[in-house]
Image (tube, helix red, strand yellow):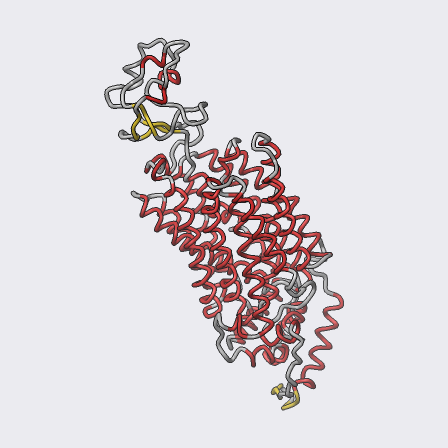
Length: 579
């Protein structure tokens, strides 16, 4: 018997679990806003060189031509011949170009850089970091650098907060992360310079990692085994809704500073109610805080309508259920333990490949919405909406085919669609956009699966360290994804080949992961090795526990308690059954 049985006795998926999961999932509505914020905060408005100081459009209004035609005397057309050049202007005004049927050879005319800055169109964005700090032309790479720096913060947070939560608890680190994201996220809206903004975004990225990783673990560790698939998938829809909320907020505000405040201020609300959370009882027991774990279990039993369990559930019962796990937790664990044993090494290497490729392909598609030639706000809604059928598809596969098949299938299908897009002509923009949306949907389903899968594969004693370790590779993937887009200057199909190839490779690695469908969460590294490496468990010695009646063997002491618990279990109705 283990903690999973104990959790069933205090109500399974009852009222407490419903409230707990909902409150932890609500911040997911704004996690999408954080990850995809750069699409709107650093959107690139249409722009052209500002006219020389002595030639304003106001002074030139006497010419009987519209403004767009008038600009042709100052700004050359780009290579497509359809729009004004964004980074060059004529050294001298070319008035002859305004004449009807002008046949002047513009290729011989002298041009120069935008010495007086740029004029930005305000129809799509009122203000962005790009228009405020002129991150265009030679400075255009700095726009993508904001996202890379943010993802660097997420990467750093995954490393730091993963280890801290295994040491100080999931609840404490989660509460701190809410506060950090609220304070630094709102502060970034006051940034006076580009460098200051990048610093705030880096620190905000660290907090996002703390929220996501600890939120996932705190949910998983209070949920019965059979409810994990459903809860894990349904709560991922909060992230999906968040993408659509981001599009609505960005369309409404259209100012990067206001948008920054609106998506970060709710973190103070999450911080305020997060004190209600109960710390993971698993973690408390394994860190020799059994009294606190017992109080948490009593609280859960009371909220779930099982007050009779408060007297039944004692420290002796708790220790008897988790004796093996407690023995194992006496030693401390580091990231080295993720690779030290055969079973853990196999899991970690495969998960590294899966996390990297999923994030690599996902952000490669999601962070360049302006290339589709459709309203960026509409594209964000479409990219969010496609997650619904994709995740429902993943839910069905997770429940009936298992985690391993679901993970590999999502990766292989996303790769297939990415490769298919290579052969679609560039002028068939609708088909290309549709395929991109499908590819994004399957990478999103892969994200849903791998979050749940990772939490089930790693044991409790090192789960957060493991989550931080493998998600580190996801952050490396998200940092590398924008850089790969530059390869289209070498060969237009090259980015798709790289994204698709990575997904195929990760799909192959996923095939070597063990199945966890309806398998209780492992609590120790020994559990992992026993289940998935074929190593026989060491024989357990009987221990004695002191009860009110005297000193008896733990098996004897447990017999009456377990009988009572089992009788209660037969008649319980959990919140999950109500679904």
